[in-house]
Length: 248
Image: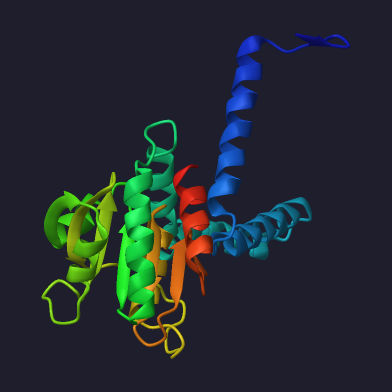
């Protein structure tokens, strides 16, 4: 391929294309996370480092050289959750497999959630998508049963031993109950959102799961996806949100 006398071999074109694609997906992965601010900071530090080299600011250059030598390790330690989530999304993208939640199972889930909302029964239901949640399932009580309204209502009834934890839904079936989820640092110390909401956000920050939460105090229905919480959902909006997410 030639541009006004400049020859660009196919190998170089492929090399540039792959690098551009990697940068594009890196931007998509870190968008909306704390890592964005860190990247801006690193770019600024690298710019100052370049200026110190150009203008012969040897002391500043020495300081930044030693700083940059350890900053990448510090970033990995501080943002291990974001890095783990990004790597999980790369390894379990839509090219590998798609979530499977049939229309009947989705309707059973929606009806169960709205019933729990009316009677103010607290619940947290995690819908596994492309990122496997096997480690969380193994730490809970494995069920492997057909998803239906009655079973969900039984599990989350206040006097059953399985009600205090999350239910994991995998491929239209109840995989496990009484599962412990990682807690998000968001809403810590606030009274509006409790432990269930922080757990829903926590699992959504570390995977691509969609998590439905029913508030025990207010009966409000929320959905956590990608570290964001959508609240006060009625039946129509809940069904639409879940369909949109599971069809991606």
